[in-house]
Image (cartoon, rainbow, N blue to C red; front, side):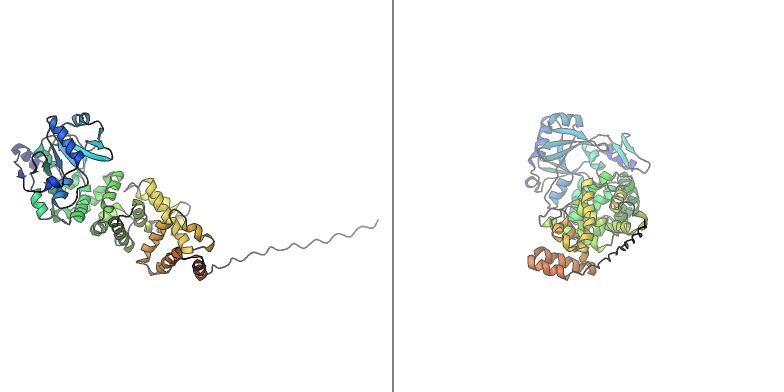
Length: 425
């Protein structure tokens, strides 16, 4: 791998320059183009790079616009008022325009003593900056190493990324095992790009699924939550989950989840449908689904009754994926409302329907009913109850099985004590 990069640096390969395309009409983000214009005006090279170029070439509307430049990070930060340098592993500059955020990175070297690795080969810190062609060979996939120069409407390709896009193939730049050792999250990214774009993953990448799954333990749980959002809340969760469960990655992310659970697959499909329909989604609901089996197991384990099983479930998961408190609380409330939905206490039915998590709990119940026949009558009952008028609700309540009456303990009446006979005087 080192020889590969050294040879690349010495030869300074000439890229393919493509002028026949339609990117000018697709890469029209005014803020990103303004960043490039300002950098160019100050004597720096600057290009759109990565996902925005790839997606535009694939006919997908780009969402995020990244800029690569030869300008030092400090120089970039000084040129833009609302900007700051962020990141420890890979420092970049965030440039803000209202709610929009443009990420600006300085070209990185292919190989340098400033790139710090751990004993597994994972990159801990990369402060090695270089030239454009070196930056191309430092990127992960060939399809992500394409640069677009808006000043002359030209695509710059050092690594045959255009060819791989035409062939719908995801392939690493350089040695596959080394690239995954540098960052095991790259395999999750491969799954995501494959689902999003319909690309085939290079079989060489999948060969190292087990190694990458084990290496995820060394990745920050907070970073894995960010990747969780990208994997499952972008409209292709079902495809991603089907891919993940064929590898050890599913249990590497959720150790106590059954990858083949019908409930999980139904939830992924439901999430995609909601996103497609423009409905709101929350990570908390998927967290509730993915950790449901673990919560149920802990709830029925007599040894853990002294603790809060929901708290124990969420705490255990935190070592893998750091679920923010608000989403963990959402999941916990969805779990706890299930018992009330099952019992259907007539005295609290109306109050239960006004609970802030009633709708999420009801949706959760309906998903369970898709794969568990025992849940169907309960889910159907709640569906009717919500749309029923007052008389219909009384009829539905009358159908509920009567709860067995608790026997009242008869208090033994104390017999009045006989008064002692008066003593004669």
